[in-house]
Image (cartoon, rainbow, N blue to C red; front, side, top):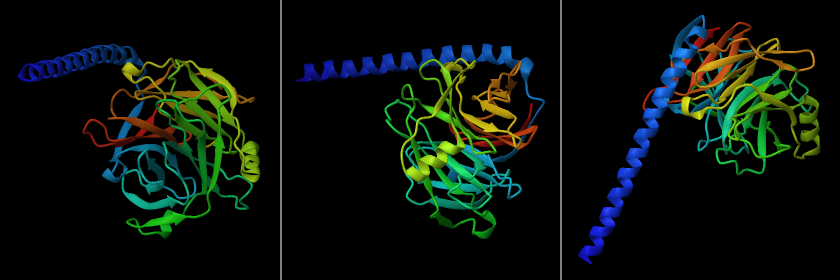
Length: 321
């Protein structure tokens, strides 16, 4: 028996040593590749970046951001998978203004949030929050979901309380080709939903769900299929963080911002909805610990938010490209 124990212990030590060697090797390759990439992209650095606040611990996995057009200074955000189905209102300084539980919703893997025109099932002309339950790291899900709620009033609640939102609509969808992991969803002012995949199949793909299709899905209570709009020339390179983590339309709907962990691509939206690529990206480097989200404060100014990562608190940045 002592001999068996020695063999087992030796095997465990060997596995641990090999695992450590692999991890350090990967880290070394990553650091070298990232350093080269940062040097190459430095010429495209954003015109200005201003740290406006820090993401509170309650939102340590903040994974999306939407700028309110109704309540000045309000940002909407939420946590990633493994948390309650709650959306939070906060300001640019990172102060939580209110929390709203989405009744009946499941937070399987919420990845992005956006504001846009409400579906016609609501008579109100105000905006709705669209929450994208679109994450799928292992690409095993058969169905993905959008949750839609009228934008709550964050000025009418206590910041420390959680208010339940009962007016909720869920839209399920299935991709037309294969399963996708996505972290980026943007809703145009007229209510069309654009989803940009993370590119785990080697391609960054775009899918669109038209506003009329969203309304029809709600009225008929059935799953829908997004329309494929091809690919973006953002070749995924996970080793250096070149994967899409967020997207947003400008207030006019003329620009679609698509971000990775280190840069932002500002696509011009053509008359037919075609996405016209920028000449160069807007580079922000590694100012964030884990940059997950983007939206427009105005037509020329962006807000970036980050989750907590590697022991660093998440950040809120105002950016002009």
